[in-house]
Length: 388
Image 1: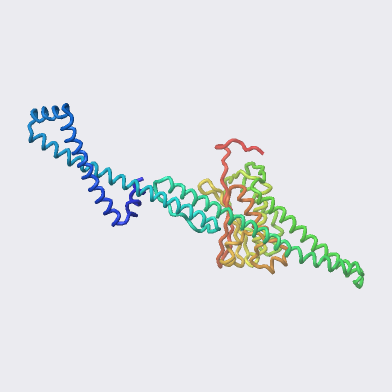
Image 2: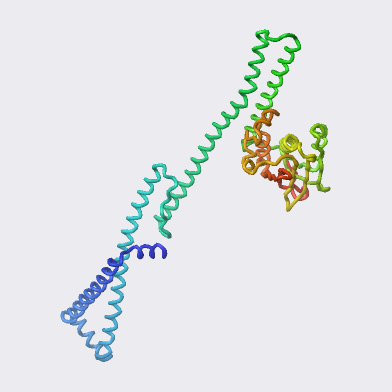
């Protein structure tokens, strides 16, 4: 309240404040004059009052009575001056609050015309100031909600655009080659089988794209159930190395493992979590084949299991790093399209990690590209058994 009083007083013009002071002095003097008239009127008209005054003067002496009277006069004069000043202050406060109320009303109307960047000035320590603060908060929430709605709408448009683009190319090829087959535009059975094989490859690519799209949509739903059980990440990563041994040899790469000897336990859905590291390994083999090694490192840091997947191929440009986990984003569009990638692998990995309350990050420089997954560690001795 002290701050609002200071603001109200500071808002009063100096000339008006001077008038209030002069009026308070004048009114105080007039009030004391009226009280003095009442006092002497009572002394003249009331025998009882006159007798009491005379007895009081005889008991204490006329000089003491006059001194007391003068002291009381000064005290009452100051008191009345303060009372009138306070009354003028409350009058100004009422006017200021009335003006501030109309200010809030006008500002609210202005904000209501889609001016959500605007904020109402908040008067501290008063009810209207609290109202203004709440209005600003509601406007901020509404602005965030509208921005989120626009983002979702843009996401839908981008999704439709990207899916349409990714579906159009293989569908065009399929229709073209099936048209050739249907019209018997082929020289012999060898060319026929060649055309059928191309159609089959395009259909497989469409199927892969639709599966990835379905998976991404499913994992984006935060309500997706997780069948969590304690999982030893050391064993999972070892199994993945064995699983991809042939694939990594075909791209002339080699696994290197730096994994803690102790168990690295997490509470997770194994089927979903293995998809994360499959996508990261496939991504590393696809875009890191220029380097010889693919490193997998795992350790525990302050209750967090940290897994690094590192390749030494071509780096990711700094301009692409912030968008690398967005759906359909490709650093090298032509290469990804040629290799059949859907552009959803990293987006799916990020969605799964976030479902497990974890994080996934990427850093890239001229030497290496490293994806880092962080998951909360799980200690069986400290926790009750997880239900499937």
